[in-house]
Length: 248
Image 1 (cartoon, rainbow, N blue to C red):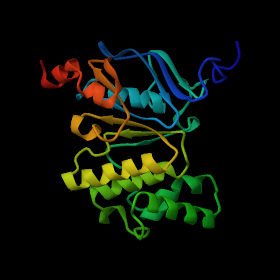
Image 2 (cartoon, rainbow, N blue to C red):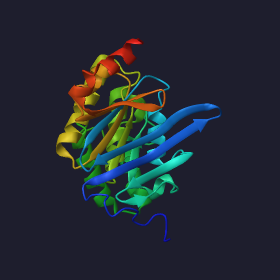
Image 3 (cartoon, rainbow, N blue to C red):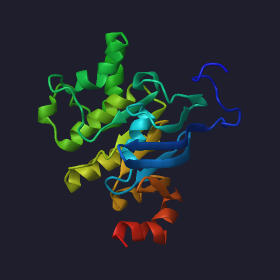
């Protein structure tokens, strides 16, 4: 039968980066996800939208390898990665709480992944500078996380995730808890990354207003199943989606 990490489908399509096939997950007696099927093309920017408890973060954690589904497959570049550890997937995640090392300055935080891989110091320095330019934080190299605003910390976290050039960037409600100015700065950075970096992005979000001008495609989750999926404008004008958010 071959290795489960080997190619699993000849019809995967050369531009198809990620597929979720029949993903289901329960915690105790609660069904969190039920038969989720989705495909994401290379270079696409897609958002999972839904209220708290709808299953969107669990889906992200399954894609990242932080949770195992009870049923279904995660296919990355035509390979079944469902049972692989997070470090064995070419995926990076930016969480709500930044997850920066408090004892390291900005430069050290961003370059951490390259240092683990024994990349030469001059190359690390060059790549860190490139990432700081990308997230519009040039000159912040020596600052400590405690000296940064919430929005700046999250931009450092994004730079750290991008420096290894992952195939897929996962953003788990990155603007959670930020004030409007910080949120605007962060969303501008994400737009800039989308427009200037060859990256496939999956954003998890609960705020309909934030996603309307940033992503191409939208998947709405509601009580563990897909309520709607398609182009962003089309989905946001779907009466079912509006009714779900209004609690009708």
